[in-house]
Structures are given as C-alpha cells and as structure tokens.
Image (cartoon, rainbow, N blue to C red; front, side, top):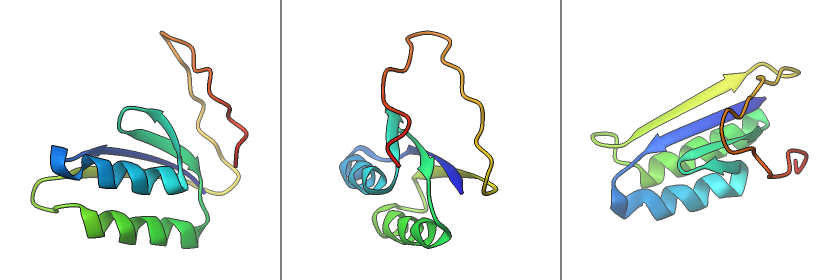
Length: 87
C-alpha cells in the first residue's frame, strides 16, 4: 500500500526516527516520507517507530492508500528531482 509518513518529534529523537523511516520509505522533505509498503513492512515500521517515539510528546501521522492507488503529488515550488521508481 502507498504510505505517507510525517513526523514532528523532540530533537533528541529526530535522528532515530529519521534512520528508521529511511529504512522503509523515500525521504521527500524534512520530516516527510513516502513509498510503497507491504502490510508486514508497515507493521515493522510502526513497531520500530513506537520503540523510539514518546507518545506523550511526539506527533507521527501515517496516511495509507489502498493497494493499486497512488495519490497525485504536485510540486508547486522547487521541482522534485529525486527518482520515483526506486521501490
């Protein structure tokens, strides 16, 4: 399923969350990641993120889209020059 993850965490946890997200998704912008994940990968990602995050302080949003669908993304300022066909 297509997944978008956005986080806002305390500075001391940023590096761990960033490393974890990079293992599973494409780093698009600051704290924004996106990509295709299997249901099992999504479960593993959630487990790893919850291990590092503080539920009393950190904010982590995950948007998932049904298999076979991909949201349409537009860049309204600086064009995105990163590859989109890695996974």
